Length: 419
Image (tube, rainbow, N blue to C red; front, top):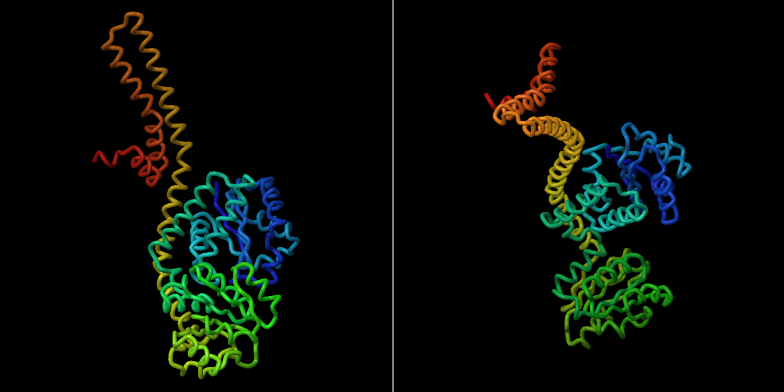
């Protein structure tokens, strides 16, 4: 039994190469079936995301080249094109790598939580295909518990490190709770969609999506039970908005000082938080001069993000310590399994000697032999039988001039404790 991790990620390979070796849903089941018939593989888990493709395998010794060959052939990629971007981790290094990946320490965004769900899904897919053997079962369960420990004992995932997330975090800090807030989202692109997801996670009371084309806005709004309006309708809805988050590709501002000033009058100066994450700006900078209007630009949010990234790096130091400790402990446990067969064989041999001698003694006793003599004879024979092989091993180590081997045997027999 040997643990092996082979893969490529955003640090080692281009997008084009990552696309070539990705395992989509249509390929994953086929790949797991193919690996189940591989002569060198006892079990495997395939992790494939937009940023990485990795094989975690319990393999027979000296099989890494065979797996590289399999990966190349399965995706019909030239091995010489693939090899420079591959990383290979064995035994404890493979254990540590999986733990780092699960904790978000190897992610493009340090500490991001989504990767743990992706690792769990990869494990579940492999288990469904009956490719998770006992070693991988223990390994992945341990990785999940380590990820939980890192999240509990560090704050590596506690700071916003995307502009969209930072916008929602800022809104939550200012309003304390978003369950009573109305949010106006201007735009319907990827950034606004991500903002909407974060807002939904905070149980935002009401979301309104304003966009130039209603069709795109409706597609986005469907997933969040949001209302849809055109850009021209913004002045009518701005009066209801506690928070405005804007991200469009408009070359000119969409929300001007006069529009916000009018809305504040209708709101009787109930404050509005405006977050402009567009470049060029969607909201006139002069809006920030109005009383009760609190305007934050993408630069303001980026400074928050940069600060939080540094904080995550600090938290990652403690996370790395945890991973190192846990991977070493798991490797020690894994090594201990190698002694299981030897211990079982040793116990079996000792029991066979005991049962043989005990049977003879009982027969002699039943035939009328002296009980005391038979007990003394049994103890002497049992002792001699049990110490015969270790005694011979001690003699051979001494005769062959192998002091290190002699010391190991002495330690194993507990002789050093008697001194």
